[in-house]
Length: 207
Image (cartoon, rainbow, N blue to C red):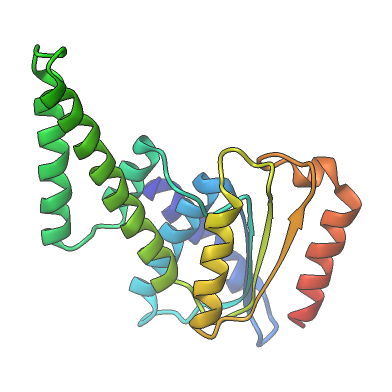
């Protein structure tokens, strides 16, 4: 993921160098959690390079994101983001304890089963807390557009709307559209005209 982010940022730099106009703005359009994790990694790299180059983000669209990460995605996003050592140590301890319980052959013991479920739940909660914290802390003050639906079984509309409220509290201009009847990342396929209208209106509002 880090390699993909570096490669993408290199392409962005090349494209910006070719633009002759003084206003060199970037508009992100992110799909699902994988796209959001890639976006966050790129934003992190941009922050580290801001002394050498200033990036102007004009707007961001999130399609079917953000939500709560599954375990594999959560671990990948967590490690890529290089969290503080104390946070990494706590997460590693939880993970190690979960593995310890899983390796125990006392599978029929309620104590070990309950302990495994509890530590796994705490571990996932820590990962998601850090992911959402990173999402909010790296958010530029440019306009955001969220495209989502109630029928999406992978990304809860409640999580998306909670993030919308938090970003508005940060002073970020946020617009959104909740589609009807379309599932995860199928909003454009199900509602092509409405989807195009939402994106076109959003982009034109940035000019």
